[in-house]
Image (cartoon, rainbow, N blue to C red):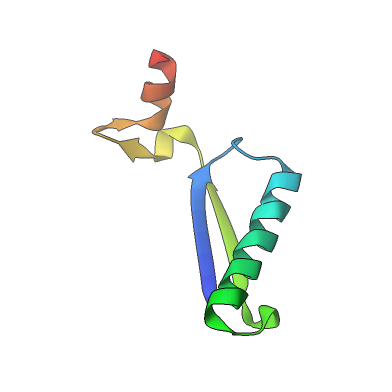
Length: 66
C-alpha cells in the first residue's frame, strides 16, 4: 500500500482544495506506477505556523514580517 504524505501549514487550503490534491496525487501516482488507485493512501498533515521552521525561524515569525 503506497502512502503519499503532504505536510503544510494549517489554513493554507480549503476542504475542496484538499480533495483536489488527493485526487490529483492519486491520478498521477497511478499513471506513473501503474498501481491501482485503491492501493494508494494520501495523508495531509497540517501543522500550526509555530511548528514549522524555515531558515532558522518559525513560519509564524516569517509571516509576521510580511
